[in-house]
Image (cartoon, rainbow, N blue to C red; front, side, top):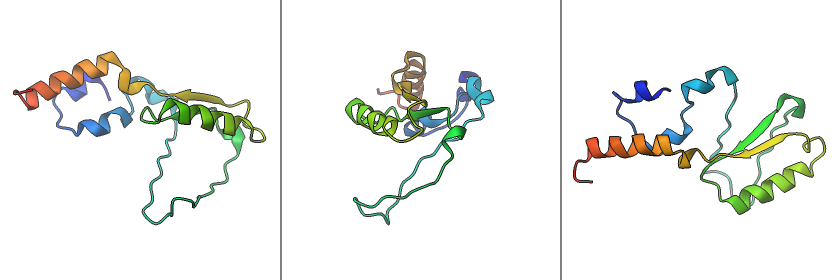
Length: 112
């Protein structure tokens, strides 16, 4: 997604941080977001993944830093996971995107 393409679109601002920006189109990444109404708070879903297929694990910008740091320590302690790259996204703090969103909000809601 480019800034130019955003200019003429209607969108829900809560979804914007999770759109893949056009400059990253060649990364060919996979994103995994899981939600379930059926899981109890203490239940876990396991997915077997060959760790050699993973280069980087990126944590949501909505995740609190202390949680991300705990998850990174836990993951690095797992066999074969210490060599992976871990990154806590700060996309929601990206000033260029924030400026564009503020401008869109003023157009959509002039009273703001």
